[in-house]
View 1 (cartoon, one colour):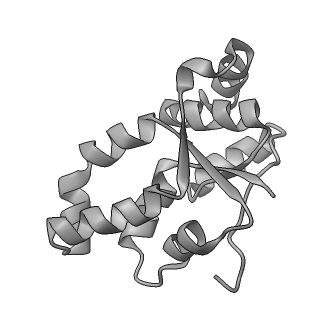
View 2 (cartoon, rainbow, N blue to C red):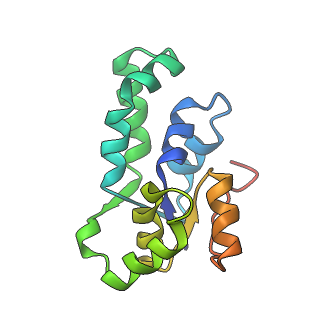
View 3 (tube, rainbow, N blue to C red):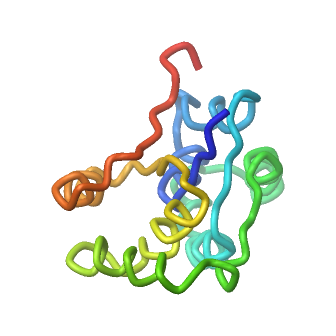
Length: 140
């Protein structure tokens, strides 16, 4: 069983995806444990109107879909992440996007596999020696 750290763009993709690959992986994959930072909630609500516009879903349907996705994800209190992991995550992310620091720090804290759709971040992290990523199974 993998500990999978889900970043914001994966949840956005699960909401926006017409193929539902991300959504199916989050909802139906019972083999792995999904975690994210509380910061994700802030990002979702900050972008709620944009998501609503892009999905063309009624608010009630959008919220139900979001609920189906989020009920499979465990929210981790960022305050519990060890300071050393915050520093290491900062070193990994400072040249790309500071908003990714909490997810990378959580990944280090839980010794998990980061699930991100941000290819620039992924490439940058690989160059820095970070190698623990998650990819959805093909049959999802």
